[in-house]
Image (tube, rainbow, N blue to C red; front, side):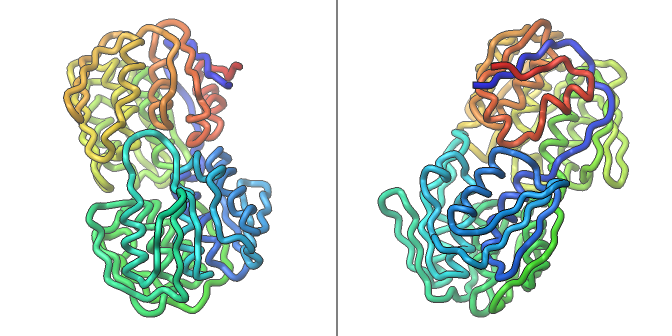
Length: 418
């Protein structure tokens, strides 16, 4: 099993380009199931979750061609299997996103209950309730969500809580439903807007994406399109935090600064000198340690839960005491125990991590427990004294493309070992 070996103490410096957003690419790939013509998607990141999704599409009968320049062409005209099997779904929560497209286009779908990171309960009941409101018969048995509908009907759906995958699933289901569907209290994440723009490119009629209410006028069918996935804001934020923790100076290119307002505000509070362009962000710590910050996760446009672990790592080496409060997932502080092994002064009180920074962490063997936790441990290793070994980095590979290569570009001493 691969590991990352990191020699800490080097300030990150230089330029690095960002990949396409994993959390946009996955629903867009699922959305290709709606098309009656080939679809080409560009800026698709080369990640484990993406290859799993491609394998899932191929299992169903889609023809998938991976080209150069991070492009993927999907031809879903000859779908023959309306099932997402457990052996593929178990590793990736986003597999549930094929439920809405399959049901909308083919009238049936059998999707195994999803797996993914062990960061807390992420119930599928909101997906099921929404599809039932649109006229589907849905039951859960033998570990599968089994949905049937001759044709979905437009409906008014109010989400009890904000859910990204729930919003995306029902949005994709609604584009081929008869009549008008109104989705309220929906997720406003940039990745949801990216999916909506992709669907519009195929001929969908969608208004309000990016706001809390989305209105969908169903159409008979969707055609082909070419679409470019937006840059990954969480990858961007992770590298910026790495530079802040090491007192470095980096420029992140091929990114979307407007999607990172909440993160940039906190990095400025931490003492970073930040300049922003159309598609780049420059962060300079001028060699200084960061100042501890208080963050509280909440749905977009507030501070993202996917940056919580990285800011725990930042506070671990910061001046002063900061709090990190997690309001989205109840089991997302597993990285804290590993950071404590490296000398971090963190205590947990309920859903809040209270951290008093130390001048320098000390290297230790640590184990990744989920995707973003693994990123925080890599960042901690960069800022630690000595050689840190991060185990179970298959979690990292689910969400970060060529992480060691990109960190090497910024001067880090890091390599992948067995």
